[in-house]
Length: 226
Length: 226
DNA sequence: TACGTATATTTACCTTGTATTCTTACGCCA
DNA sequence: TGGCGTAAGAATACAAGGTAAATATACGTA
Image (cartoon, rainbow over all chains, first blue to last red; front, side, top):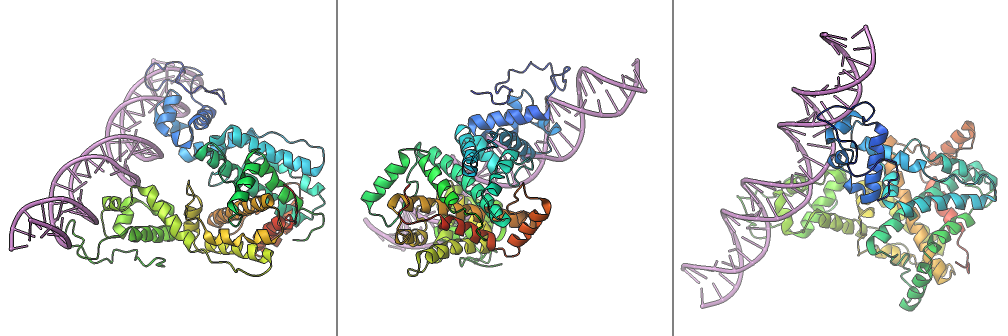
């Protein structure tokens, strides 16, 4: 079991000597709680995160967690923040299309490596305010593309929706069948061709993502009005 | 309170005369249950759908619902099926871009008219198998666009992700602030320009959706390889 | 040394999904 | 006509989970 955040999952904390004594330095911090929750979610999914279970993992009773966060939602928000902070920093130089692709691929890599975590981070009702400085800075590439400001905004928004939606979809598909199933069945195709298309797209698990990304990037043209 | 499915929300069912008597014809059907759930969700959101509440709405005890569906998930699946069946049928004729836009706008219209319902229908863990014949048939327009089969599949998939993600995002935004907030903040823009861009995009609530749609459609070119 | 504060425990409550069991009315068939 | 199987519902109960309230314990500080 990977230990993503330096807090172990199984109650290997020093044994506490009775009720309510944080013996000098081994008291829980909000960071500890968030990291423990992150590990639990990464390992077993969001539904495994219950207050009782998290307390158990941290060597503490459920109610003790309320000393550090007002409620469970706040813990989930903190987990989302931690997760997003791990996104890789994109290159600051290079052709703008490459830079955008690099960011998008970094997001997808995290989705594939820690799907449970990614899902939680991307589906919080209010996205974390510490939101993705990496991404935001990287999308300065859109300015380099020669797009008018409004077109930059549209492109940013559309790309963000695409990458997020694609990754969540892919996670669901992998959870469902272990393999991508009918990524984009086109109804009117005859079955023979449909099979060929699906095989082509599934032969490389990156191909569908990249193709959608290219499709959107292809629509970006300098000076286009919105 | 709108009555979307012909089953009233408040227990105006004929009063039952005691425990366990479906007096000739007034017995509950699975359809009744699904319609009741749909109305409840449309009016008050998914979190309002509890077995006890639904039973109350239908004039019955919670456990009676298990005579018609194996569990709550099955009821939600049925609701999703009902909701998707209401999607408008797109025109069969016209330029392919217009036809695609027509389908996408129809989906968005439903999202705006019945956001709670739309959210439930679009976020079922396994999408309903009765899935959107309207959409699928309409996307035959992609063949008319002169796209190679694999490119059709990519376009179909990308458009589907975009429309779904946009509508879910828009619902969240409207729930959050009553108005679209920072639809697509581009970080590197200076604040003055950012404000101008946001104003421009928000001045017409359809503009951002249409612009993203156009962006994707612009990338579709006959014969493009994948 | 006494006390306030931070942290943890204990206990308990409420909501929600659902299993189990019992009840009642209806329609079929001898 | 009368008994009975069956379908639909009610009553009861339980377990899981979030969290409120009261209580306890150590530590730092005055």
